[in-house]
Length: 271
Ligand SMILES: Nc1nc2c(ncn2[C@@H]2O[C@H](COP(=O)(O)OP(=O)(O)OP(=O)(O)O)[C@@H](O)[C@H]2O)c(=O)[nH]1
Ligand SMILES: [Mg+2]
Picture 1: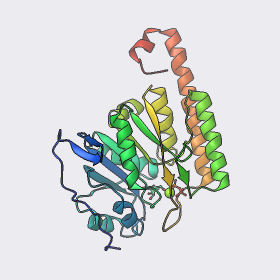
Picture 2 (picture 1 turned 180 degrees about the horizontal axis):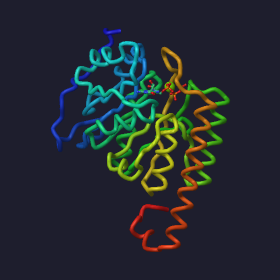
Picture 3 (picture 1 turned 60 degrees about the vertical axis):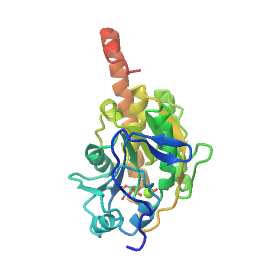
Picture 4 (picture 1 turned 90 degrees about the vertical axis):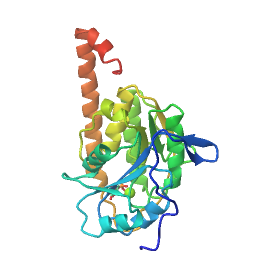
């Protein structure tokens, strides 16, 4: 396990300094990678191995793991910032990690080995080219998944279609954990959920806030070790609940705007 070490320097970068992230692009904003992890010690070597050397920091949010997730993370990435979550669930973990992250750009990466860190460059390129939110998609041209069953694909498609219809989005994927965004987005989406519905909530709120979203084709690999924490029916229902709640909030806002037209101007981002 400990033999798989990251192949780059992990030296801190000075703010404002241009750093090459590919053969044709250099950037200045610091990039934080936030990794929610619950009993992922066996998978972490594969995750850390693919993270690029130019990232500013890795924030690992430990979900009270009973294996040696934290020790393995510290061994693989000596500067890793480990945060222990107080609550439960992936949403709670991500919110905790976003608060701890100091970069201008935040990238969300799962710890089960399903995400390839080499794709981070595509997300960051989209953000520095003008997007506010770079949203991974397994179903955009060039993306893929080795991990989803037919039933999960169907559920994801149905929920994604509902979000597109109800919120005027044009997403090809909905419940996917590989995304990146500028820190300022957090002020506009004010996350308040605990579970796997967090990605859906983010995807809906960025559209409601009028932020510029760009989909990034992404390939989801099979979880390498261990079993999924997701339960398709329970978590699918939580996602549906979020969609319905966000929809009724939007109606309420529109009603308020009609009653008090100035509200729409002040809250310019509400569509
Ligand atoms: N800190 C923390 N991490 C969590 C929690 N639940 C899930 N995670 C992490 O979130 C990531 C995604 O969880 P998975 O169980 O792989 O779920 P999934 O990727 O949606 O589902 P699969 O496609 O079946 O793998 C993994 O890195 C988990 O370790 C939690 O309660 N706390
Ligand atoms: Mg997974």
